[in-house]
Image (cartoon, rainbow, N blue to C red; front, side, top):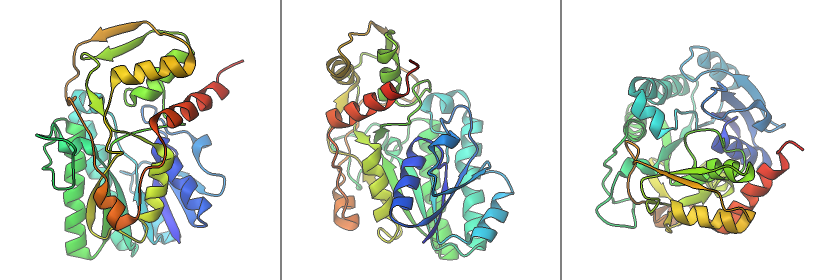
Amino acid sequence: MRIIVTGGAGFIGSHVADAYCAAGHEVVVIDSLWAHGGGRQENVPRAASFIQLDVRDEGIGRVFREFAPEVVSHHAAQHSVAISARDPRYDADVNVLGLINVLDNAVKAGVRKVIFASSGATYGEPEKLPITDATPQNPESPYAITKMIGEHYLRFYKAQHGLDFTALRYGNVYGPRQDPSGEAGVIAIFVGRFLAKEDVKIFWDGEQTRDYIYAGDIAQLNVLALDKGAGKCYGIGTNKKTSVNEIYRALVEVTGFEAPVEYLPKRPGDVRDAQIDPAAAKKDLGWRPKTTLLEGMKKTVAYFQQRMPA
């Protein structure tokens, strides 16, 4: 199968591209290598072709025409809640207009399906946990709003043009290649600080929870979604909630270093709790998370340790 992975040099997208290549598919990665996005050319699988291009660029059309993909896995995005709160116009430019550019060119190129990296953040602060696919969406940040809007555009393009889609509302994905110097991804940020023997910053009181899911499990999910989940949106998580303070304590256990902590005020757009039941994804896609949080954190720490300067 011929697949374009947008954002495929980034953290999650590169794991997805790896999995597609390992499954024997022909992959082209499109990534702008935006400084704040964590995209690095070294993350691109050797078996994949790489084109440095912004998803808002008109040049996307040429790539689609020449490669003629059957599926597009759309992972390119402005992914930071904090950046979206500071600059909602830029967030919408990338996450909405960039998506529309991809969808328009997918229709022109005869693409069969788009797999869309949505977000569990679209649920906002739910009235009860765990979150299920029946939980109403109530986004509380510009980032989450644009991801929800993206799902509506997918429905429109399916109805209007017959372009199939599967939207995956990820919980908090973590693992190797996540940018430890970015503003999104508390585990990667903490790992970078722990290994550098530096202090960590915890916003709010640290008791806010998220559903953390390992990147390798997300990659396998995207392989399953190639031929399943037509026209549906799925909440993707482990059905377990973990607080920031628990992440901190686990890293103390894994690294043997007790990093000094500075507590700071709540950030705009942050929600209190998240826990996503992936029952629908299990039923329709045959997927379930396999990596425990402690296993995933050990793999993540080992990855960053190997890349530390001697």
